[in-house]
Amino acid sequence: MAEHKNITLNMGPQHPATHGVLRVELELEGETVVKARPVIGYLHTGIEKTMESKLYYKALPATDRMDYLAPMSNNLGYCLAVEKLMEIEVPEKVKWARACLAELTRINSHLVWLGTHVLDLGALSPVLYTFREREMILDIYEACGGQRMMTSYIRIGGLSHDLPVDFDKKVRHIIDVLPEKILEYETLLTENQIFINRTKNVAVISAEDAVNWSLSGPMLRGSGVKHDIRKANPYSGYENFDFEIPVGENGDAYDRYKVRLEEMRQSLRIARQALDGMPEGPYRAHVPGVVLPPKEDVLHKMESMIFHFKIITEGFKAPCGAVYQAIEAPKGELGFYIAGDGTNHPRRVRVRPPSFVNIACLPALCEGGLVADVVCAIGSVDIVLGEVDR
Amino acid sequence: MKDILKAIGRAVFKTPLGFLVTLKYIFKKPVTLDYPRKKKPMAPRYRGKHYLERYDDGTERCVCCGLCAAACPADAIYMEPEENENGERRAKIYEINLLRCIFCGFCEEACPEEAIFLGQEYEFSNYDRNSFIYTKDEMLVPHPRKDNPFKRIIRRVRRVYGVEDTK
Image 1 (cartoon, chains in turn brown, yellow):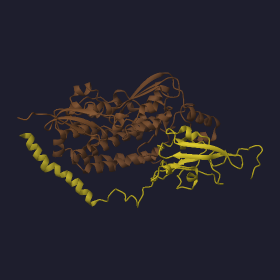
Image 2: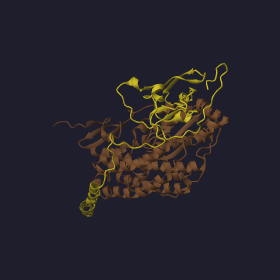
Image 3: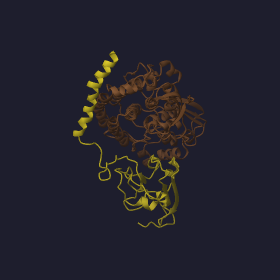
């Protein structure tokens, strides 16, 4: 009788269903996964070290490039951390605008997730529809900051420009149109027997395990833990908004799908409230020597010109001390730890990326399942490798 | 047994509803663009390929202060100053390495003379790496300009002693 041996299968880093350059080492017994080990580091670009070597304001574009599907959230996290370190209070309008943009970013990220995840599972149409809707959000990014993906729009102490004139109109258009479209995705997927077979009771993680793996975001809420940093530890004016935290029951891929779809609806609700309540005011805090003065002043006033030159050439000096600021990014808790040492660049920047922590539980999700379900597990975690490797 | 019946029910009655959604789109106009022939107008703030501005009288706005190079997170800008015939400062060499550039727009934001802008152009692929070193002469030619009215139109003239005013 031939000796029975497990096969070791290498999945990735060029596998199209691993969402980037994730490599998974699988040990298989027939079709069953005995062991799964995610191998990361193929996209390591040293973003944290790059940020440490740059002035505070110059490190901002690097944050865009971590989770490139949610640039505004990354900007927001970094700016809030630096503002905490520098003790800058931003104007009310900036807070509301940031919250609105962060929610649009959540929708953007979830739309891409939905399209690519179900594409992995064999549904070819939704990716076309979700990217079509995503285009509207990218148009808003472009109108705001000038770039569709690497926005760098949210800056330390405010925004880079004032909100564009038709911002209100464009966002309201999305708020009006998107619920129908989400309903359309639901018609395609929620009751689809093939989709249910592929996702129900697949990649299950219990609430206790989810907490022990320190998961966050939809991964945690899909398992039924009602935790959201926007509620638990509000930042950027989230305490003003009325919204609900959707939770799942079983902690399987299907529940995460439902949680994310519901989150998109809640995001629209927040965006509507943010637009309705947005006060008038300046788009940047007035903190001489730290925040760039408006361009009009730079061209006409001597003091502003001096501060402009000083900030751009030397940056600003941050006090000694360390801060940690976490925000609820689309994928989970995105935290920035920044240690200042009295000079004009940070001594240490450490990012707590949601994808990196969430992908760590991949063995727990896959082991005991089938090979085909590994794809579903990776998809339902919602990773962006730029953020995992940084 | 109940689950199986439910599944059959979904497969027969619910799943075809999804096909109806996709079928609906056969009769709708496509949202995609016939790209190389038709182009999408970019937003006024779009950050594309750089260009340098001039004053109405043809003088270069750039005075080679180096603030854009200082603000550049990617260290993509290199410049050397010189004096023009009036004794005014301007750039002798002004180069942007488009392969390093990350199009963050910090140079445009930093410029105190409103000289450099990131324009509307986004198609600049080429076969040759050297052609991505974008020089001052290439940047000064009139480009499709950004819809960006200047906040300061009047030229600041610096009086230089020992040089006669040509006006």
